[in-house]
Length: 227
Image (cartoon, rainbow, N blue to C red; front, side):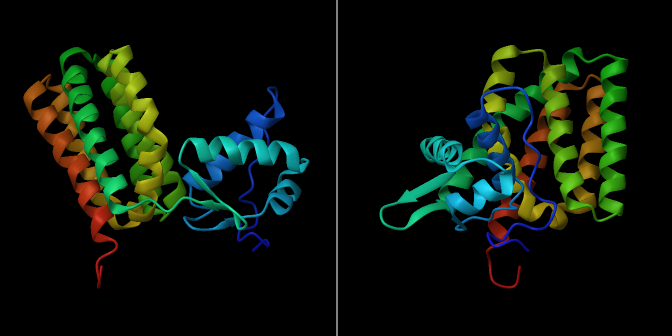
């Protein structure tokens, strides 16, 4: 482990081109989203700068931006810490996610063609392989790609924009329950694909609502004694 608690190899390479502060912001946000930097973890500017190979200034600017977006808490005389989401915060966001994704599933069932269904099936197969290999990071990423594909097939730009605003936080909340949801999540994805392929809007809506509700309940259950 590195001194900030980052696993070896967890620090992403800074993508080029683009302003350095934006690249540092994206790198730190990815580390938070994947929980390589966990909730409540102290973020030391000098250490993060060293890991990313940059000066402290772009790190400071990135932390200020992350603070304004609710990812990081800046505490007077203490420094920066990864935000610890409350149960209420998670519940509100995951409830909104259910509304958006259920409508996306309905629209996808109404308009998706064979190519779209095939793309969903391929993503589902990849996700099943990731679960079988106990590759949680890959499973989380593929889950996000699967839901993004359903949103794309919905063909509603406004709905997609709203979903994009919550996507990263969904990944953040999904990561700690990904292993618990495991194979069942992809069984539910298979059922959803079948509904979309059958152009059954009502069934697709119901299945997506149930699927996202299972994730929401799993997130809350993780904190219960014995869970």
